[in-house]
Amino acid sequence: MSKVVVCRPVDGITINSEMEFLLDDEDCVRIFDNVEDAKKILSDAGCTDEEMEHMKFLESCGVCARCKSPLFPSLLPGYKYQCFTCDEDFYSFEAMKSEEVKPDEL
Image 1 (cartoon, rainbow, N blue to C red):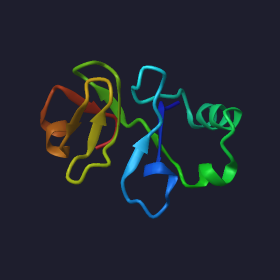
Image 2: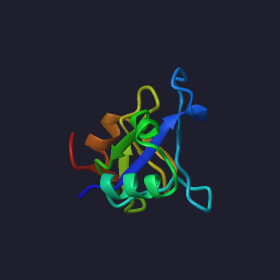
Image 3: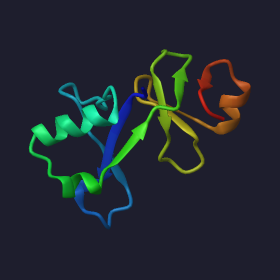
């Protein structure tokens, strides 16, 4: 199964086009084992189904060769992938020509 990160419109306001990610206790992007695990933890924390409808559950799409952490689809214009562990964004051509990024899907 793919690792998952959760994001929502900034401050939970659905007209905001920018997204914010769910963070862990160390203010790093929280990476869940799968979508079901993420939804259960959110539900246990008091998040409603309606609130979850406005969230995006982004599944990992590869492994970062720099740090071996999961890669996720980038929300930044022009970038294809992002690694939250080493805080890098990658263009699609970097993934195809670089040994540093090895996505599962190109």
